[in-house]
Amino acid sequence: MVRVLVYLLVIAALAAGAVWLADRPGEVSILWQGYRIETSVAIAAIGVVVLAFLALVAWAIMRFVLGLPSAFGFASRARRRARGFEAISRGMVAIGAGDPVAAGRYAVDARKFAGNEPLTLLLEAQSAQLSGDRGQAESAFKAMLDKPETRVLGLRGLFVEARRRGDMAAARAFADDAVRRSPSLAWANDALLDFHTAAGDWQAARTAVERRAALRLADKGEAKRQRAVLLAAEALEAKDREPEKALAAALEAVKLAPGLTPAAALAGRMLSERGDIKKAARLLEAAWKQVSHPDIASAYLDVRPGDSARDRLARAEMLTKLRPADPEGVLALAGAAIHAQDFARARATLKPLLAGGASVRACLLMAELEEAEHGATGRVREWLARATRAPRDAAWVADGLVSDHWLPVSPISGRLDAFVWTVPPATLGSQGAHLDDDVLGDLDEPSAPLLEGKAEVAEAVTVPAAAGLAPPPAPESPKPDAKVETKPEPVTPPPAEPVVEIAPATTKPAPQQGKPAPVVFPVAHAPDDPGPEQQTPGEAKGRFRIFS
Image (cartoon, rainbow, N blue to C red; front, side):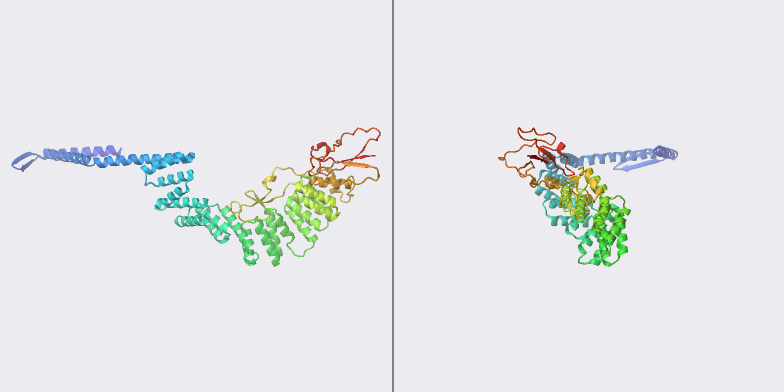
């Protein structure tokens, strides 16, 4: 619409000019070189316009003729540039597809047609990396340092190559240079954090974490957790040299992450040593509500030095009230009851854990209970043997590594806050040892005789066999002419020794002529032994055959 209005205005102006010239006639006379030209003003105006147009056409033709060489050169350069970018594009696709031959060929074409382009250097470096030519890759990355637009990219490549060849000093120098040139680089800040944590420089690592949080390179919750982990590491390192500094760092770590077990346990123990019992108890109770851990339970039970076993049992009861039915609280309560010699309470506490599948710690507590209450070596050996086959308890796990102690950094990957309190992956899905009714019945009746329903010789035979050891010899018969024949499972039977075949427990041997039939006495099995019906051919058969 605007263009139409402008066009109409121009036409109106020309018409108005023509009318104005027509209303004012006149003459124009030109005398030049003996020639005289006379015409009207209107014709003279038209002649001037035509001459101007012809002059413009002549100038355009002259410029076209004079600019033909440069036009041809520009077209040639444009074609080369287009071919160069096409080679770069195809080379990047080849790198993504993992074709080093094609990537190298396109890198040569890109160097030929677009040699000064930054992408050419990138293509050369990545094709060299793909083909394994580290020297050429480093040369390409060093060439990037000469151009401001590719300098940071070159530092990134040199950092990767230095870390690949194990030159951590050079890698750290490249990361430092990259952070100075561009503070918002995520990879450089992450690399510096890893270098600081690997060197144990917790203060510098905290500075790196705070810088990453300020630049929004990390989530606020993640940065807060990382600061707490670094403070806990600093506290654990300084607890013997600078206890005041260690306590301050541990308290700050607990404030940032109340469920951080090592910080809470250390702060609770140090407050207890200083005599601040109430503050230590409140801190440990708050940590226990966040996460149950044996270190927190141990620190809470020992929060008041010199307390009696009954006082520790009362504090263990408080833990179970804070987190009812928590396995860690149950184990802590059972251990405190054993130390307080409340054996009935310990059995009643452990019974739910044993019924659902006893773990290693539960079996060890049962062995301790049996030894403390009865001094029964056979039953203790039975629970110790069961502990060797029981599912493992939770432990500190990071990158497949299982550790008894918490560490701020994974020794495998160098990752900060990598350790997690969980069941080791190797035991996930394993079935816990199932206890039969006899064992659970013994838990209900702690005063029952140890030999009731089970012969002492059975414990002597079955417990070593369950542990993979050779059983002791069978006891002698009271009759002097009795012949006792047993078939225990030997550890390594010699091949030359004949094998004595004994009939299974479910069949009766045929009586020999002139001799009475043998008397078969069944031998009791351990609670976790499946019995003769489920035995495999390689297992020992617990039977005595006595011939008279």
